[in-house]
Length: 319
Image (tube, rainbow, N blue to C red; front, side, top):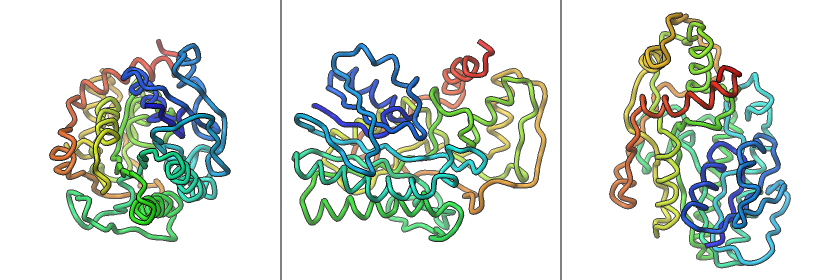
């Protein structure tokens, strides 16, 4: 297939480029570098099956030639309010790429008869009242809260995707992606894994907000990309959770990272100063992914962390 990936220079988008090229597809990458990093795709510059266009998909999408599939992964994704790349500081861009960018992608798929994959998110569940979260759960979100620009953009994108599927018969898929980590994450992402890994590798105590009892379920990027590829090749149009169902507390994660890295500095606890409405529990029910895609994560947390460490060492100048 000839496949367009929006957000191709981002964390997940760049890994998708690698995966699809390895499967012998032709890849057209598109990114405006608001949050994407050109270094993430620099190694593809000489690949004859890879073409790149610098473009904001919220404005328009123009791709010469045929397009067989579109994977819409363009969006700010970091909740870090202290980073210029976090969606709290890019609220309009986040809403536009979720609404107008999704609309442009779906329009292209309709015109080309192409299949479409939306990168949605576990954040559409908000701070969940159901645990673990199934695809049938409608969510518990604040439409005007500090995370609303991201949560509501993705919820709208899902609704628009289903509208195009039902009204225009566009061949669509929706991936609800849970917390993912691995090489090519931004160091200023603001989420647990990059924060903890940086502190541990620098020999600093890991900062735990609150008492560390809130939970996360972390999926290594290679597993996640495998799930996305299987979804692309499937015929499923309803949302599918893709993530690691192994739930652990933030305190357990911090202690594991210190042990794996060999950091003796321990932990420090601070008052929760993170972005408001931070979900207290997060765990995917991946029954549908197992049944429909024959997919489940294979890489353990320890193995995934060990595979991520060299990238962070290099970025921190420690390699």
